[in-house]
Image (cartoon, rainbow, N blue to C red; front, side, top):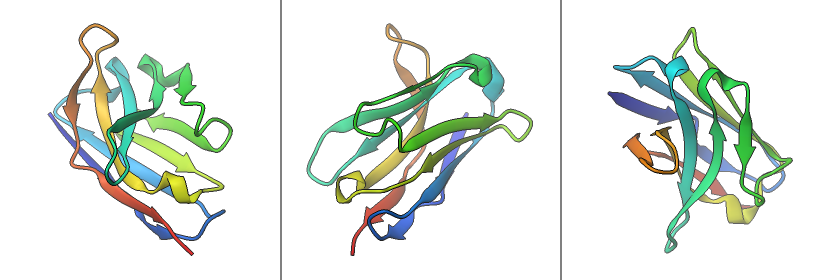
Length: 118
């Protein structure tokens, strides 16, 4: 199992980025998936989740209305569209395979860095 994030970078406040997470070694459509971020000096923060098939999506209050999670099952890829970025969105963003509340996140990528700066 491998997860590889990409799409991070530096952006001004109010800007947008789209993160991608390429999955291999398993079939994306068969699993819930999540995005988690970790800001400098802080603990991990769950950001968003997409259930099996992508029919339901969930967001942390801090990103609701600004971020959108989606998946392309044919490409085995998960996405996170981030709009109206704020300074406090600066973090290392990880995608992870989500086994639910009991079993948690079992595989993580290495992350992609998002820096919001003027």
